[in-house]
Image (cartoon, rainbow, N blue to C red; front, side):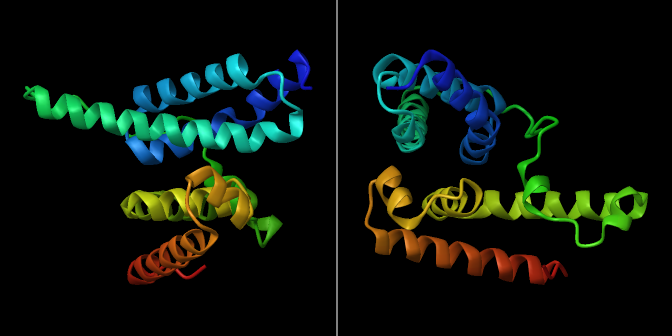
Length: 188
C-alpha cells in the first residue's frame, strides 16, 4: 500500500515527463496540463491504495486513456462547432526539456562552450520537431519505451496492444526519426 508521502513523491517524479509527453500528443500547453492533472487526480482517487510498485503502470495507462479521451472530445467538438479562428497556444515546452537529460555530454569540457550549447539546443529542438511529426501510435510507443524507459510488456499494457505492435511502432518510429534527422544533417 502506497502511503500519502510515497504517492506524492511518485507524482512529483513523473509530473514533468508526463506533461512533455502529453504536450507532444495534443500540441497545446493548457490541454496537456489538464490531461496530466486529471490523470494524477484519477490515480490518487482510484488507485492511491495500490502498492507503490504498481503506480507507474497504472499512471501510464490512465495518462494514455486521458489523452485518448481528449482527442475524442476534440473530434466531437470539431464536428459540432465551427471554429472561429486558430485558438491553439504556442508550443513552448517551458523550462524543462527532457531531451536534454537524455543526451549525455560526450566531452565535459564542451559543456560551458556557448557554441556547443547553441548547437545542442538547436539539435534538441529539431529532434522534438521530428518526434511531433511521428504518427500518434508510433510517437506514444517511442516515448514510453525510450523516454519513460518502460519495457515492451509494460508499454503494450499501457497502450492496450500486443508486444509485437509495440516493437513494430518503435522500429518504425526510430527509422523515421533517423531518416528525418539524417536529412537535416544530424548524425547521433
